[in-house]
Image (cartoon, rainbow, N blue to C red):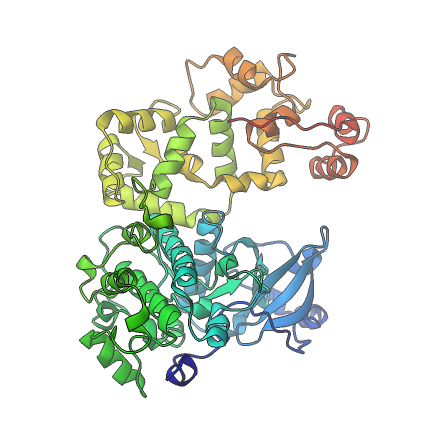
Length: 547
């Protein structure tokens, strides 16, 4: 019996749960909605608007032109950025469907998690922005037009071991990336993986984080999932400990193991005519590795499946252990050591940065809305075990251990000293977010410009020693050699830092062609005869970026 026959029913519907789909539906619902919305708002709805995001946002219809519907049930549409012509997908959630505070919180958390994972792994869909108007919340994200993994499985029936290993590696890398940032997926399944390119199976992107949650190391969950998620989670991928209502991130490995089983055989390991019978099979835990096609599948592959579908969560492989398994590793060679947890790698990166860049990241972090920092706040709270609002040496050491990494005291001390820029002996939330925000935030020119303006105290277009002295005082930084800070960044040796040098420091090379120059000038509201306007409009230069 193939996957067409075995995977049916309400708990497993093709193309109904992912955020995007390659098919185009003939719908004009949202395409025509801006005018409709404006008419409704004009009747007074705007006065009743509440903000899921907690703050007002730009009007999405001023930034994007909406096209045809990509995915009907989740209301996902093609949209084109007006200024660049780049196509994205936009999931538009009607506020009328948010009937309780729980619904609002679930949507808010989904957006927070997407921002938290932004740029962390190439196989996780990238959020472009979240917007809100009186009637809808809009999530604009990377467009995946290659279709869903589940459709590819239906078409193929099953994969070769080599191709299945490639896909399993991608899926488990996504799980590992999420776990390293304290995110449990809870709804891992082929429908929630879309392809950027329909001709390239490796272009997978994980989408739909509506059932995902933040977790702390050792935290145990006792709920199945929010009600909306209960309707979307498929019985075939639910781990036995979830059914027993005592589970953690290990349940994602189980789901990944189920996907691997399907990739190799074309059918799920546990399925029956009814959902309850499927659950009974999951709890029983008997895995068929004997009937066709399993006799022709390698022992190494079957060993990995057994270890991923181990009924005892404590004995199940972790994501990193799966990635080190000989069947997954290229040429059968496992990496010498595990990758650094995401937070640790970011702390190490921050410790190597120049002082001005550290200060600038603090300024940028403080300017970001809460939904973009919520994930880092959860990690900070997990380390700040006594809720004093600060991380000490002992807390950092224990926190890193809980996230799976053990360092020598001297290494932890170096990290503390690097992040503790004002020498208080502790790391508060502001310093923590500055050290751990993803650097892809620096690709947003408006953030770089705002940070530069913060340091350019007199607004003359340059950061001088006097400017730095005032900024350091605001950051409670003493005993700082201001001349050294200038010298580290000042590429033309004129004793001051201009915007191009600042952008190069931040790792964002700037080409001062006319179009970009005018954009920056407009952002700064500068006149053409100003110091900034003159060189931004005429300079054709790319500075080498450095830390």
